[in-house]
Image 1 (cartoon, helix red, strand yellow):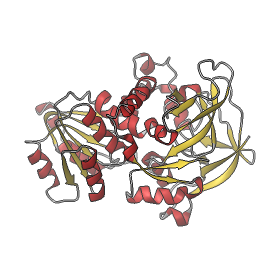
Image 2: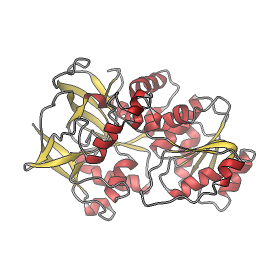
Image 3: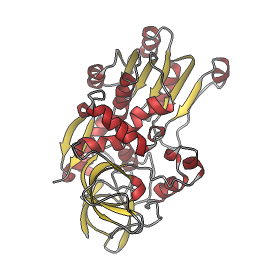
Image 4: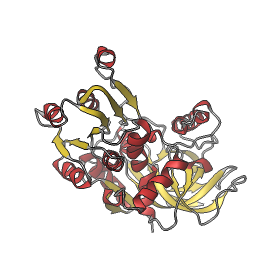
Length: 375
């Protein structure tokens, strides 16, 4: 079938993207789902810093690539061997298809699935196949999803069936922003009620971490960002304190309001200075968690003695250390119970044709989560 998709042909074109147009809207050929695969009609797809990191070269991927990884849609066809989904099911797509058989999957850590990581790096589906072509040339899949398109073929393992009563433009956010941000709090850090936390970087993932810390019972949430608008947004979502990271006394302020440093600090910015600030703001005996993805050439300056002498912990969190089949329905239930204000994160709706302008807004820090909505 023919589908309309946003395709990145060349990495590193300069902003503003409204002028350089790194994403071209092309008519691609999409093959039918193979064994273990599903055809999904995409209803909504969110713009995420992970997409921007591919566009600007911070997260190198093979090109040409059809971008987009945070999405929700409706099942239209099933490949051979898929018996636990039905046509018409509403699904959230997740960007790590877990095989269920490798070492990490067997250990209960599907976010670290080895075949899933290999396929994502190569730009294929979990099967190793590609279903997209342009003029008979293969087009790579982005994280097994390629959601900036009106239809996508994905591995069954990329789908989580969800309540059809949930608007799909909100459901999309649970596939990355919420899964990553809330998961970093409850899965990676295993935050206990009454803890003090800081969240550095208030994009969709960082604000989801604020929501996660609130619902998990943090006594203090210090929100940190360069944008006063984002800080006000975090305050409205439940942050107890806000600190502008650009202030000369930002670190001192965090340590002062937290009584010497927070118990858990989260870096959600994807920049080394943000991680360094989060680490410095963590108290003795505390934990620093990072879900940011700086360019692979970047390095962190750290005095290792502090890990020992202060019994610190520094942890990475990928896709919120999630088990998506468990966590996506759980977080949706929290939203439906009025405990997780995910709807507040959706600040812009746009058409596929306006996606380059959307990435300009994302790069400039305007708004929180933008979602491409398909008719």
